[in-house]
Length: 366
Image 1 (cartoon, one colour):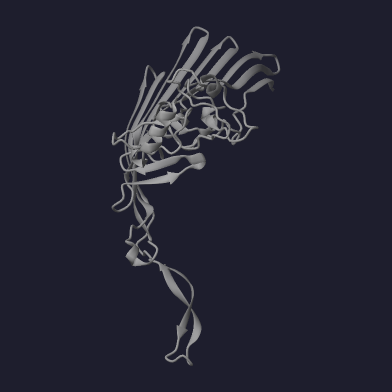
Image 2: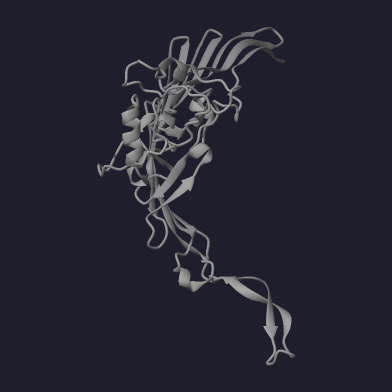
């Protein structure tokens, strides 16, 4: 169905007969061929049970293509009407899931181990007719890009080199096109080597969609005593994390990482982080603002003891959740697990960090 809007139209052959009449005019082209997007999945799976099913092995290799994602049709301006939605974009998700588990006993000692690992390849295959990429503005000065052949919503901006330490260097970078160049700022890289700093020098800095997702669980029991542990991990993931370098307001704290590694007058010109200049917000996405948010976390640990009495079974236990997290050395947020979008803003207060929980209890079964 085409979009229309109210319009006033003057009708009449002579001036005396003319009058304004209410009507409607078409504002957008309709598309009667719209349909639901289609998903095509190809799977190859293997399930094995060995040693009387003590050892279980599951492998699933898949290729999932989503086709006909709605996009705006590309029209020349001379058409004069808004473009209709069309089924065009196509996204590929392919990868593999592997699960292995083993359980056994040594006399009174019973134990089990289970592990899983998943690999994911995400790629944009088609965007719009005649269009191979689009940029999307992100909060706090960031830019994402959808480009054919790359992951969805990839981070797209400048790589930085060293800190600008002289007035002459700042003037040179300004002349090349880096408008924010000044002493204490980072110098942008001329990625394409044309002697200018422009949008053409931006690069894909990473993807928030992790390549690897892993899990591990361990359990054991001996003469009434039991223990269980669960670990999870996400690997090869980058996110836009701008709050580490916000300095717009006098009442906002800075991160210790920035403070300890900031450039100061007379220091090593190869400093990694810019100077702390009051009012400088650094609100443009560069590799400075991209964090490696890979992590490994102990999700839970449980210790317990069970005893059978004459009339009931009693169990005491102590458990903990989110006990520790191993992160990349460049990550300084609260919890990398919380960030599931291209931007990771949890180190500013937009998202409460995952709580560490301790529980102690008694179970009685009659």
